[in-house]
Length: 321
Image 1: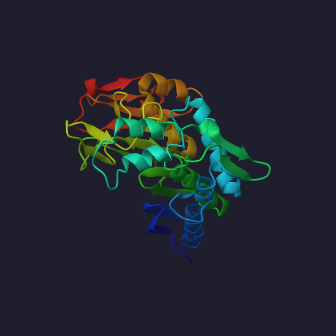
Image 2: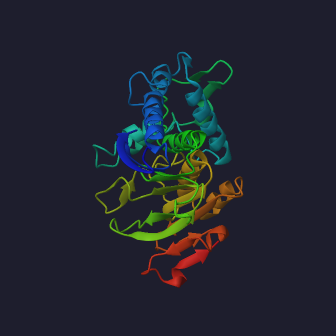
Image 3: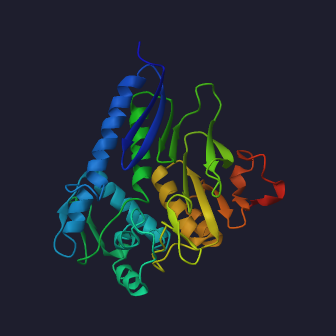
């Protein structure tokens, strides 16, 4: 008999992926999931030379590129979510991301350079032919980056494979993007911790879920402090070209589809509470945990019973939306 409880950690998609799979076929199904993750990375990473996304970016303004079914699906989702979020979720932000270059640079780019990079950001310039499985970008210099949706897509694909092979209990974390299948084997709901945005060593709370994705966007993941003491984080606004400044420092979205949770967490973080809630209204079962600059925690009504704040959080700091 194969493992009933399999725990594995792999490095893929430029992050650490942790999996817990329960069931008699856990070891066998893990191999299927692992293969899927590496296959998706080869198609969706703009940093891999022969990926679908790299070929689209390389052909920008010149020609269409042939793409896989998976790439076609994720681009279709991204365009739809761009429409829903009024462009606050935009996968054509790659020129901006390259300019800010958070991995190697610790300086704010020149305003003229930001304005120039921003002129290339427009998801309406993604030309997708779903029938022929081809895609293009309208103008040279444009580029796609799936960092705000790729991990969600991978999470959904993994959950689908696990379910197809009869797994009924699993927990996957792709760089902090959590996808759950069923309940914990003991019958209780999965308990997912929410990182404290100002204390790396603690949680601000936790949420109990079943068959849900839990995705957080925050200003604490990658950032630098500029010469004036401002925190310059990696979540860039497609409107201003600068790090988003909506009053939120963390936005967590809980939904049964990780692609949507992934994109929504970004858009809500960039747009702020009021706009964010309007976008979420398109997905009535989506819930959110939003932390503002004063460390007040705003939770949507559906989380009143399932969200638990950390012991050092005052009840007055929790606001039900």
